[in-house]
Amino acid sequence: MIKRPSKAEQHRELERLTAEYLNKGGTITRVEQGETGLVNGAFGKQAFTLSEPKQTRTAVPEVLAAIDARRKAKTSRAQASAQGRRRRPKKQVIYDDFGEPLRVVWIDK
Image (cartoon, rainbow, N blue to C red):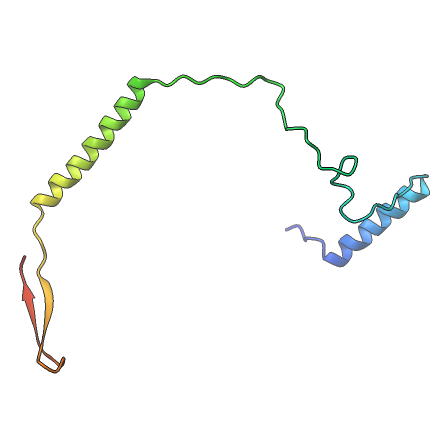
């Protein structure tokens, strides 16, 4: 099993890589907070574009009609089976005039 590096190990590795970069002649430029996301003091207005043009889509009414028909058939089958299903008796508590339970009865509906 491979051990994940701890935060201290990650910190030491970043420090080592930074020192190595600076020793090779690299420079680090200090940037003010929030400045890196701005282009000439304003947010970039360029939209993300893909290299391919946008494709037009055409609806296929036959496929949509088949999907709707299957959906309707499924719901009608569920309703038919629910109508033929026997209902279970329901428990009902009978209370007296003061709200105290007297007895429990089962009601068939």
